[in-house]
Length: 408
Image 1 (cartoon, helix red, strand yellow):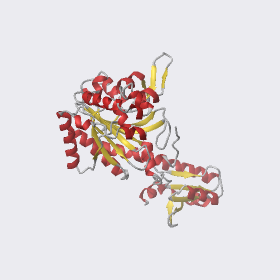
Image 2 (spheres, one colour):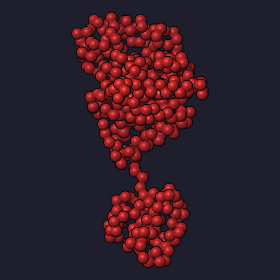
Image 3 (cartoon, one colour):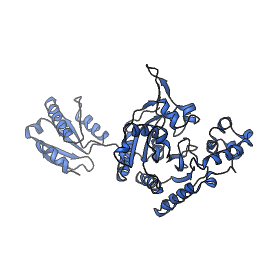
Image 4 (cartoon, one colour):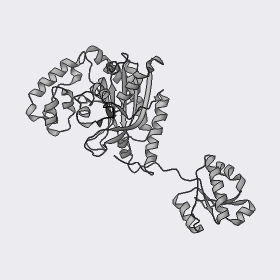
């Protein structure tokens, strides 16, 4: 778990602000849910045989012996809130997005932390394949807006309750013949969650399942038509993508369209964003039978990909260098009035020398400085210095805010 410090936070703010702008253009509204939910919510939604529920959740009993869990992902809490607050009665289509910390007890590595942050979006109430394409178009645009080009979109279909069971059994039969070549985790879960074996990162499991049957070969007519339509709309929108038949995602609630934005810059943790359809999830949690689709973006991984391309921190518009107690009092009043007017202003609080104060102004990268002493107080005006080109102009102290507002 990491602190996010000044000098770093500006990049985070840029990523979050851009998400709000892009998602807002697509009609999404922000939702905020608690960091703690009842444990049952995640067992019912994510799946009891997933790695998240079996190994990674931070779960504890409160003083009333209720089992609570720090949220390991964002979709289930949004669904709980959607149902509890009857948001479907406000509009037949709900478009929601969220930002915030998630928690999983897993092995830390590059781009993966036990407290991590996600930016996510969910659409509820639309079954049409056009919404799948629109969600992917929004995700594609977001990466364009934040200036990350080194990602590629991969898509797959996981079928539905009609066509997946037969495929699932065929995959189990296939894996049983190769159990001796699978890792311990895959041996343990190949019957309860066989699709996860296809996503295993262990080299031996990859080799053992290289010719495994693909879900795409077993789609029912409805799922096949839906996936074909998604791809057609993506092509029409000129959004590049590749079909990855081994992509299964780690959560049980996904059906039909699944997708990842992947990169080769982060080692084995190559997924920067991921999501898919979860048409039965709302109903399974006690809500109406509404289809849904969504995704989550790993913010830490975006920050890693931005690398040295840091977002510059905001700098003071003005630094006031004051000489003497009376000038310091006046500088404090001037600074406070500017700040109240929305101008970022700073001053020295310790009565240091003029030379030391100017060093401080340079260190803060202040755009302008104002030297205020007894002569300036008597005259009611002072020299405003542009720190970039060293030009100066005389300004009345009463007009300082207006001059700064029009300054470049």
